[in-house]
Image (cartoon, rainbow, N blue to C red; front, top):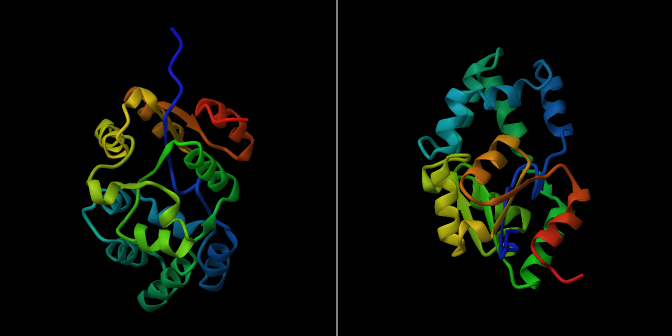
Length: 205
């Protein structure tokens, strides 16, 4: 028996709806004598990243921990992190076009993301706040992807049964978690996926 077409779209933020130019981070690392990718690798250390997206610490506390681990003088480390964090990325035009088309076609769209308490100000700055029907934040739920409870709550908030929801993320582990929770899920690696996703949402040609 074939699966019913999705009636709602859940879409990730970083790596899908928001893209990052690596140049600002590289410039900061060069200026402060840090090794390549030191900022991101430090920030993504699981023991400080998990509490940041699970709603246990604030974004400011997370960044303070990042600064404390950099191998440079504390004042310079705090300065480097602040400079790095001043760049907040930009909306991906292809993913945003899909979101707009889905909503125009009568599909509910939710942003479903692991995030900190900085998420909503970021969405305002990126002009994305009004582009989705609901924002589902791990920091607010106190549950992060790919926990099954995250997807259960996301489907409840978008008011659609899991089997009628299409989830799009750039992380294969998260995609697998969504599928295990009963959602259709697809890994995003770029705009070439849009045609397939439009069909999965049964959008008019």
